[in-house]
Length: 183
Image 1: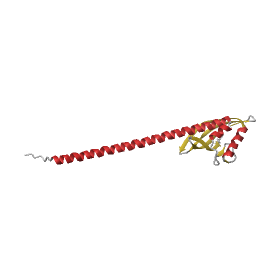
Image 2: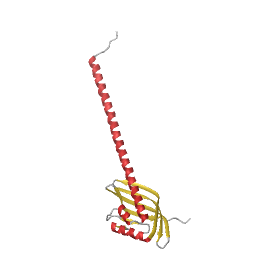
Image 3: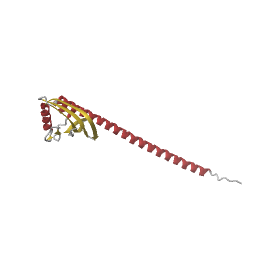
Image 4: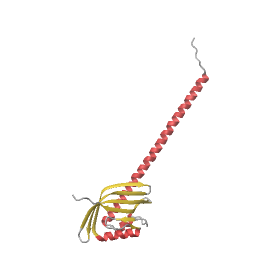
């Protein structure tokens, strides 16, 4: 004779335990999925912000080059932070200029030396970190002196920016001519 141990109460206990396990499994999966989506969304927003910041720095760099090429001191005023820690070391500099007043005077002096300034970006790398950013690269420079002489060279360039109320402003500029062996 075959006997079944059939107890309605033990079957209910087993179902209840299985239901609890199912609920725990579904809850755990939902939490993991929710956390994953939240982290993914946060990373996506951070990447979008970084892309936006890089675009802003790139635009500020282009405005700076346009101001130099136009030899426009008013445009220079708009792209620089007017701070005592602003610095300038141009490709023809013999000293480090520190402080906004000195930086502005250095640009005025440079603009008075040349009838034409042409700068093109050959290579650029931009990095942002919070309210600071730096752009490094190589620029091709062509200068036409007041006496008609021309000067052409490539330069390593580093520009440092600060974000002020959503605007990227220069706080440091350094350009160093690249010396190459004659061919």
